[in-house]
Image 1 (cartoon, each protein chain N blue to C red):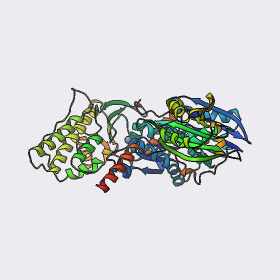
Image 2: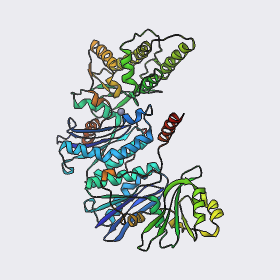
Image 3: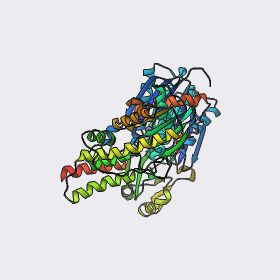
Length: 337
Length: 236
Ligand SMILES: [Zn+2]
């Protein structure tokens, strides 16, 4: 690994945040600019891919300029340009990929492709000392993945959702409870005042599997609410929210703890937008402390999609020689390698 | 003076370089997929063939649509990001005017259009003016083909029809305009990057590179539905 310093302009547009950041040595955030589209997508109760893509085009150069200005750097100072190549919404990814290629070409800079999940994991490196081997649970509107990392830059996907992502399940339950989008914070807040008095299913899947499934839980919640309405029974919404969340958190914590034990990791990293969920954080903290493992959770601004995390992961990729050519394309279904 | 043109608005995807008033190099493919893979290599090709570096560029022109949503986004994003990174001006031009430019010195109306499904087309009606530019007879619009032909039938003279999607609309054009409808040559049925240069050189650059945006020709499906729902809510 080279010890020379790096200054990377990183770009991220995989979903509904247009983001650019300037990261020094993979650890120091010189600038982190984000144009969030959440207010727009709230009007539709979820992310509309075509609208997300349109807003990315409008915001892209503004956000890059903001990052460069805040960092106080010129193109000549940069070591490389990095971009999320996948996974994500194809139309959204294309904007970042083509912007990154143009900037890299304009100033003859190396172009570094980054996997979005590597970004989520390496967000932790911006605020903590990361030690290997580690296990990371990535939970958001688009992800539910367990990734094992034996060493720096090596990723092994050991578990993922077979249907809905955690955040999606939250959004759907929130909608049925008459709560706003995004569902995660709203359900968590309502759950604080309720009791886990309802028995919702937990999908453990086959023995030893680290995969997840939330569609059964989601259907069970919807059916329970529907049946109550049919029978004219009042169900306390806060109890529904609390019981739903209890099931989600139980599965996430139990599976993560089992994987952490099986792979004998020192650290467990929580990443993605749902990592902001207070109930999940506390339950994970308690479980890991009891088992003598360290839990790392980045601050909220590093949990949701951002370009700083892409810059952090790009530093590792750059040093190991990862480069893309001018024919780089968006890869919506990109696997983690 | 080095001017780069980029166009990925339709199946036609490519780049061209204008140097001191001469089109030095041009690269274009007419393929359905993967403009994102081809456009930057095309830019690199037209520049390096002419021994021009990105830093030598003075101005960028891009086809802004209407056309394929994904296509125009790739072209406009590439053009505005390049212009921003190089701190040079950029101009967006109508992809329908670019196609009409293929009409050359045809004296008469030029009707350029792209199919937009369900009998609709994005279309524009142009005429060559005395200065060699194109004058818009009817603004670019998304309409039923039958609306365009009804309007065109009222005027006089030959109408040059240019479109990569002619096959789907040839019958109705012949029926309604009869012998007045004339059709472009094989190589004139899609926009070429050199046409983007020709049209763009007659226009003002965008006030700010940031303001450069695709012209989709219509709202996104979800936006349309929301607007409709709001209207419905207000009236009843
Ligand atoms: Zn994410």
